[in-house]
Image 1 (cartoon, rainbow, N blue to C red):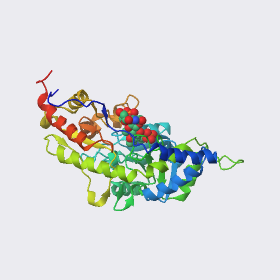
Image 2 (tube, protein in one colour; image 1 turned 180 degrees about the vertical axis):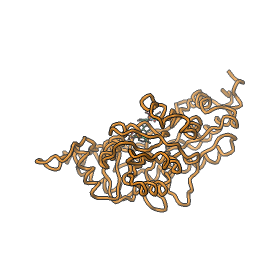
Image 3 (cartoon, rainbow, N blue to C red; image 1 turned 120 degrees about the vertical axis):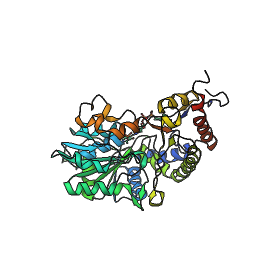
Image 4 (cartoon, rainbow, N blue to C red; image 1 turned 30 degrees about the vertical axis):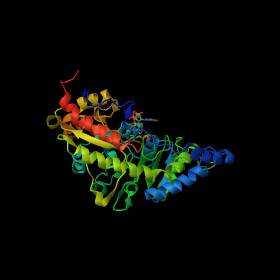
Length: 385
Ligand code: T4K
C-alpha cells in the first residue's frame, strides 16, 4: 500500500442506491393507505406505467416485480423454444431465463469495443433450432440493433433485448426499448432508476402487451376465464409509488453521474494501460449506469485481479462485472458453444474489466482520490508491506 494515500474511512462500494427524501416517499405511501389498494394493477401502478412509457419513449410497457421474471415472461410471450443465440458476457439472469424456458443458450463471442454480442458472428451460429437472438446492451451501450434486426428478418428469428443497464438510452431520439420484439429493463436497487426490486417489458405491439399482462397475472382474463399458464410477475403499489417518487430525482442523478463520468475520463485517460469505452455521444443518449475500465496488464504493470485486490486495501470495493463468463458456469460449460475457443474476445475482456464506484452520491473529491490510488498502486507493488 502506498503510505502517502490513506484508505477511505468508510467502504466505497461499486454503487449505492439513490434514495428520495423520506417524507416525499411517506406522502406517497399515504395515498396507498387511503386507497387500501396494495397490488394487482392499482392506481400507482397505472400512473408509473404511463410515466415510464413516456420517459422511455416506448408505445407500450408492462411493469414487473423484477427484471428476471420480466425476461422469463418475454420469452414465454414470444413462444421461444429450441436455441437462442446470446452473449456470455452478462449477469447470470440472461442465460438463466432461457434455461427456465427450456431453451438452450448458444453463446456468441462479443465485440472487442462495445463488449456486446458480435453481430458479425451471429449468422454462423444459426441452426434449424434457433428461434431468437437475445442481445444485452451491456453497461448501457446499445447492441448493433440494426445489424441484428437485419439478420433476424432474413432468418425469421425473434429479437429480445436485455436492456437491464440501458434505462433512458436513446439512439437518435428513439427509445432503446423500441428495438427488437421486446426489451427488458431492470429497476433493481442498484440501477439508476429503481423501485427497490422491479422491472419492465417494452414493445411496439399492443397485442403483445395484452398477452404479457395476462402472463404476468396467472393468465387470468376475468373471474370466469384463465387463458394460459401464467405466473405472478406483478409489481406492487409500494414499488410503483417508490418509482413515481424516484422519477423526480432522475435528472439530477443523471447530471451528477455525467459529471463523475467526465472526471473519470479526464483523470484515467492519463494512465497508461487503463482504457474505457466511449459511445458516439452525438447519436446517443446514455444511461450513466456503470463506469467500467479495462486493465491492460502489460501496459499498466498490474493485472485486473491485482488492481481489484489493491483497491480493497484502500476500502474501495470495485466489481469484476462480468467475470466469470456465463459460459464458464457449471450449468453451461458443457454446451458446445461455451468452449473457450469459440469465445476468445469474451475471455480476454472478462479478464480485464473492472467496474469502479459510480453513483451520484460519490463526491468529485472521492473520484479524484480513487484515480490517484489507481495511478499510484502499480508503482507500489513490492515496495510496501
Ligand atoms: N440482466 C442483466 C444484464 C443484469 O445486470 C441484471 C441485474 C439482470 C438481468 C436481472 O435484473 P433483476 O432481476 O435484478 O431486476 C447486482 C444487482 O442485484 C443486479 O440487479 C444487477 N443486474 C447486477 C449487475 O448487480 P450483485 O450480485 O452485484 O449485487 P450486490 O448485492 O453485490 O450489490 C452490489 C453493490 O451495491 C454492493 O456491493 C453494495 C451496493 N448495494 C447493493 C444493494 C442491493 C447497496 O449499497 N445497497 C443495496 O441495497 O448484483
